[in-house]
Image 1 (cartoon, rainbow, N blue to C red):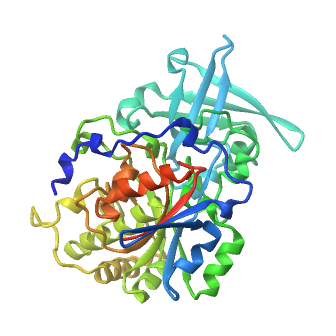
Image 2: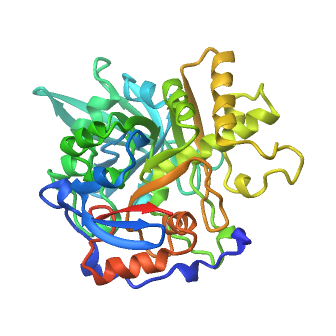
Length: 416
């Protein structure tokens, strides 16, 4: 299949607004579960998930945590400016960013940009009964060189060097729920729009397949001897970016930051380079690992920056002589482990723009737990590739059997 020339119109389906779950169920694990096993479709409830999983297998979660990335400032003229944090600019490391004191900078999307042509925005906020001031200043001259798409470099400063940026986001920021919910963020979203295992701050959208898990389900999974591992992929707002081009070769995938620790790689090796993935973000991380390992086979001394996986690399392997063909998932993972050893590192820090669409051959992921995605989205393309094009039958079943769709909707277990 010529993946680049897939027509996105072939991935359209009718999704009535009434089928989009605006709120989660009161009990996370009571959502419906569609089970697709080698072409057969059945349904259950999510708390029964462990019974469908093979004993003594490996399951991988994305442990990212959604940050309160949306901030509002009001100019002296009364104009309301929205500043939406997209990715760290200074410092670029997420952990260091949230510990920043006094100053930091982000690449941001800006709402009502035409009203903020110049000047410094100010906002007062309270922490522990004390009032402080946060300022935001846009660097106009660096937009073209440092901005990405419609993002702009924004410097933040605050008048207490004892307060870190994580504290400020807790005081000033708002949790950014998906735009298709068509409602304001509510206080309860701060809990329900986080997975129970979220740890590492950095996402502006939740890895929603994980929203169904409860501690009871996780305990049942452990009782089946299933080994759990975590990766980190910080989900960007680009996950909601629609494919506007007629064919996907003109669609530019967003880049996302990933972290995979040495012990996770070692467990992947123990399980022969195979895993059950919770969510499309875990899929993109795991499958990107394979291509990072392939890069290292060709260039063992590659720098961290050289390990970024570009959008079309999986479909161009070997064509220009820079790739090594025929590498198993185990060998690719071993290459990454060896690279960490040579560089005295405990974790791989990289990024990926991988697009997974029909024509892609999965290397590591053997089972997938995921929600039901928007029409004509890259996430639907990923699902179609996983079930060998059988996505429409799955979605027709879900639509005709009262499944709830999108972030707060129901779930599926896909076993091709």
